[in-house]
Image 1 (spheres, rainbow, N blue to C red):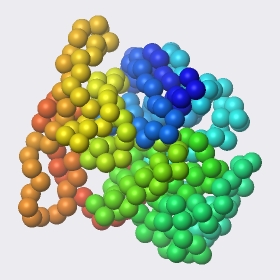
Image 2: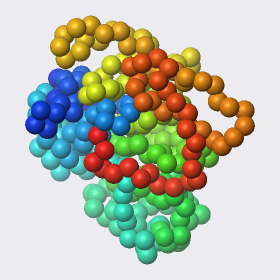
Image 3: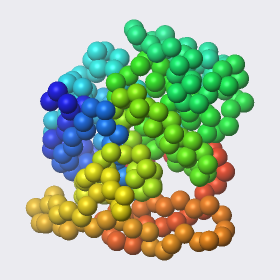
Length: 283
């Protein structure tokens, strides 16, 4: 357990007859960037909320940094940082004041200037939040999560709604976190994001982890056989784009509508930089 930051066995979460998470197993090593890849409704956010201690589980065993998050112990909360799908801070505070505010809640916070340097906001130290671009506001979200110098960070769809340039800037922030030795668990819709950032990737669909393995240059993970909830084996193939990127036209992003079907990935136009519009309730 010493080298494992997160260990999950048989995790389930049900809402009446709906099974949002169906008995998943998961291990995240310390210092690793781990990605949960899948479409909306796959169970990614529900899983992460359980790991954060925000949502109760229906069954299974969960250990996060040696603690059961369901107990909501202060000693665990001091060691984790969370970036939600969408957040809100006082728009009239400056960037420095915002990070200082949240750093004050932790016993051993990281230096504010160092935090802002890590996320690339040093030049916006005295700018008011309302003057930041969407991408800069998202980097401020990461700075807030990093303010307490956590060992583990949860990033829930950190680049949803960003244009390609803003996404790559956000990727650089995640790489900076990894270089500090932080453990990072991120959720994403985008294969290229998982491939560029993660040491290991798990693909979720319909509440199950259907494929899992190390990142590879030729694709994400490997084809594996997993058993469904009914016990019948299913062969899971890698999800690949259904068509090559066009040579002209608006920027596109690859996303998975169903990671369990080859060719189900699509490319769609990406708008201008902005904060993700997804709500915390997306499953």
